[in-house]
Structure formats: structure tokens, C-alpha cells
Length: 216
Length: 216
DNA sequence: AAAACAATACGTAGAAGTACGTATGTGCAT
DNA sequence: ATGCACATACGTACTTCTACGTATTGTTTT
Image 1 (cartoon, rainbow over the protein chains, first blue to last red):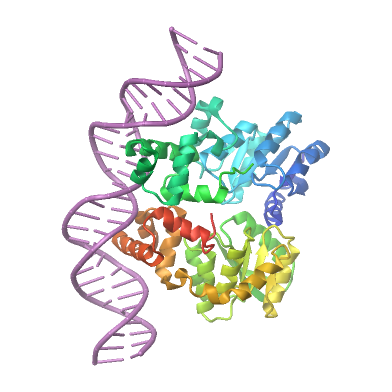
Image 2 (image 1 turned 90 degrees about the vertical axis):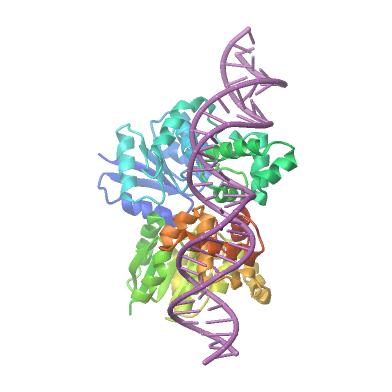
């Protein structure tokens, strides 16, 4: 009984690595591979794979939206996300969109096999490096979920994030906005939680790297 | 005549892919692979590979600094950068540090073979997707680059800067390097002074915006 | 040999940030 | 009217970081 897999990542080297790992399992077969986001859904319709292994950051169309569209096809195709992003917002967004698994690219290759097997058994799989809390929080707050971490930030939070990135202290930001430093601390705490990070450095990196664009 | 290659990328899947492509060439041999930045230079000293294929974004110590240190070993080991970043500052920084090739991770796998062959012939290789302008700009502005504040940093300071940018606390960095948190504070203070900044946010921005340390 | 540099480490002090919890007021949607 | 999101703010506790100063040891340069 062959498991038919479609492989989606814009880095050919990653596809090579994934194909190599999957094909060590006699029952797994990579029926096709592609790196361009816009071509994924047509390929799913054509090949009707059992499983799609899907990167979040793709040219043309993001992994979250692709996941939604695959789910909308109602072919029973399961989507496993393979991504270097492990923060709560992205994991939750992917699960919300219909992914049945989320594997951290830094994981040991064996996890990929486990994720595919779990998907076929109808069990959700998360890399151990992704906190158990992520799943719990996801289930508790599903109704609030947005597809983009930045979109879940309030206007004030975005302002504060910007000023943190500029290197201003909480007191300087408070002075600039005409509010209490205690309120800045609240916004900061909210930012840390919403973006799934734990330090100023990570906030700054978040700002700069994505600008603000989530991997979609 | 065997070409001995050390493979460095924190994503096991990428290492699998690269290994698979390289080992299709009978004369290429991957003698070792590693994902942790701090362990690369000791491995180079141990194995004395002909070529190191090196990702820019690594935990513990960045690819640029590693390239410098490998060059400093004077073993004749050639460094080829394999990165998803193609912008000028990263390419230039890598070349400046002593890399002899820069391959875009989105390239066709055949480019990797070409880059290794070019390196062995003493020829510089750049992925075609990297503009010819990058190389020209690099040559024209080499004299400006030498005055970069980064040059005045000690190797230890660069290590600490990298880890600060990763979001680690002083205590975590101390533990990782096996020294006192008080020493980390000293290095940090020196970094702030040498780079003329006053906060963690500014250190992080410096790292990222100067393209010296690739974003994670 | 002496000086400079790099790495290591500590004392003292205070600023700055994170975490957990509490609360109120306003505006908007149901 | 009620509930929710947002903005504002505080109490308590602690961690983390910055600033200024001290010191020793080893290595390299002059």
C-alpha cells in the first residue's frame, strides 16, 4: 500500500533531503515536488496525494493559504507543515488552516517519518521543540485566531514594537506617547505573548526580518 | 583523488539534500557534518577538509565569523557559503571574510557541484541569481569596508554579539561558553562602547542591518 | 623588557525589563 | 443590556542589563 506524497519547498536542497529521508520507507512515494506556491493546488488536484509536505514561506502564495485551499478541495489530502518557524502564531495559524502536523526544520529527520505516519493515522503531530502549550492555547483561543501574527497586534502594540526596535527604553516610549511606563510594559508583555518570543532581541529581530509580513 | 568536504547547516534536511547531491560525484566525500556554529572550527582543525560548505545562519556562531576563523587557520580550506540570503551586504561580508563561493539555496543543485569544482580550481563562484553588480560593488567599496566598526571587535566580542542577537540572556551565553556571567557583561559593555550604542535593541539592529550576522 | 591587547572575573549601584496578578473606562458589536 | 477588545494603570516580585570601577593572567607587539 503506497503512500503518495507531494513535496513543496522552494529550496531544492531541502526537497532532496526530504525525498531521501522519505524514500527510505518502502511504502512512501514522492509523486511530485514543486517550489512555487501558485502551482501547488493544481498539482494536488492532478495527483490527489495522500500527504502534502509543505513549507510556509513560498514564492507566489503562502503555505497557510495553500493549506486552506487544499482543505477546501475535500480530497482527504493531509497537510504537514515543514518550517523553520516555531512560534505559537505560525503553528496555530497552520493548524487553524487545516494542517494535521507541524515539523520544525531543525528536527531530526526521523520526525518527518513520524509526522507522516501520524497523519495517516488521523493523529496530529507537533515537533517536540514546539511547546505543548502551543496546542493548548490554540484550542482555547481558536475563535480569535488570525492568519498573520502581525494582524493580531493592535495599533498601539505595533507602535510600541516599532519604538522598541528603534532602541528606545520603556520610559522613553512612555514619554513619547504620553502614557505611563507601566502601560508600555503591558503592551510589551502582550507583544511577547502574541509573537511567541521572550526578549527584546527577538522582538527586534521579528520587526526587522519580516518587517511585518508573516510567511504568507 | 578525493575531495574532502565538511558540511555545516543547522537543518538536517538540508544536510541530507546536500550530501545526496555531492555524493553523486565519485570524487567528492563528505567527511563530517555539523549544525552548531561553535563546533565548526575545531572540526576543521581535526579533519582539515578541502572544502567547507557553510550556512550563514547557525546557532552559536555565525557563518561570517566562522569563515574568518577558518581562513585564519591557514590550512588552505576553502569556504563556500550556501545561504538563502542573496542581498549584497551578506554576499560581500562573506567574500570579505574569505569565502570563495556563494550559492543561493534556491539554486538548482547542480550549482553546488559547480561551486565546489570552481573552488578547487581557485576560481570564485557566485550563483547567477546573485547580481553581477554585487561583485562589482564589492570590489569598488573594499576600501570602505575595512573601516567597519565590526573589524575592531575581538573574536570573543563577535561571538557574544551573535548570541545576543539570537536572543540569549547573559546567563545563557555564559553557560554556553563556559565562563562567568560577569565576563559576558564585560564583553557586552565593550560591544556597546565600540559600536557606539546603548541597548540590546541597538546591538541586534547593528548585527542585522550591517549584514554581518544573518537574521535567523 | 615593556607596553598593549584580549580574556577572565569581581564589587557596587541602579536602571530596565519580564512575569504574574489586579483593575477601570471607552467604544463597538450583538 | 451585555460581552469583548483595546487602552490605560497599578501591586508585587524578580530577573536581566548597564555603568563605573577594580584586578590578574596570558599573548602579542614594539
